[in-house]
Length: 369
Ligand code: TXA
Ligand code: MG
Image (cartoon, rainbow, N blue to C red; front, side):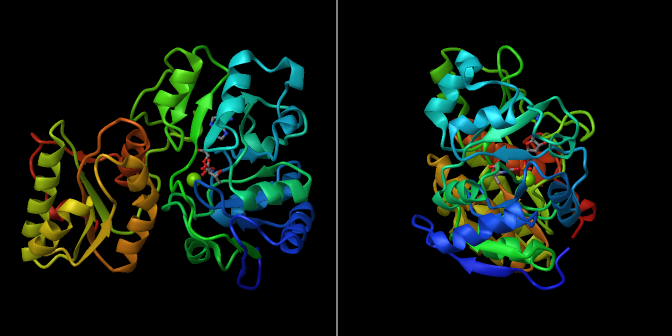
């Protein structure tokens, strides 16, 4: 681990300084860790072909070695370097999705190639691969000349980072370099699609909506919402993940406005008892939460615009923690588009506990706060 604090190096997100990128590429090749922006969240990068460098990722994040990493490539030709496929052997559906959605927030799980060490894939026969769209990520991978293994640059289990300051708060005392390219545009991680099964299976909803994938493929993909598995069994579907420090209460139900009303009522009850309440809120409910006694709110945007909600979600959770609230409330979101990923992240951030219309009101004593 680094003895000094991380150096934060600011780069233009669209036209990063080639000299800085070349230096960071050299650092990656030398086995060092470099945190960098992608369009989804900040990643903690290491040379994916260097087992020792990859092992450091797990150490600094406190991540179990059973949870595999996504390998980031700079162009589609690099696929043959990391997977078991030659370029002319790619299955038709992989070619369709790669050509349409890359560069972008889609990770494809494919057979793993021999250059990728066990540590990257947790010994699995498959590897998750993604070609990110962010100019800094692309330039860094190209400059490094090797594929880059990168998880989200947060402490394991904590809320994912969408700014360099978030990375510094979690890992600033443990890594040498943070490339600061400003806030991430998408704000939640890539969609992960397992292409080694038929039909493909959605393992994690994310920046590319399920509907768009199904439209390109011309058929449905498999997806089971809110699947929970032990990390050793199958990765990527852990229950407690993305969690803030505060206790997060999410309200569920088919009548979405009613879930927000319940959240407002909950704030009123707990604020009256002296709890420091925060709200992760649609813009239209912010004033209601304020009048109910919430001391902080993170604005997520409008219900009909889940991409904006996704963009603000993780930053909002971190902001409410920084504001020192004990309990955070949030209402429900529809499944369509990026709403599916928003629902997934909130559910896991709440440790899989939802408050549904017919459930008894959550007890104050059950609160961590
Ligand atoms: O948007 C993203 O995907 C970001 C940026 C940095 O690219 N990365 C990211 O990595 O979210 P991470 O490590 O936080 O989440 C990757 C997930 C893990 O839950 C892991 O279990 C799953 O991908 N995963 C990786 N390789 C896999 C594989 N071969 N099979 C199934 N799941 C895999
Ligand atoms: Mg992560």
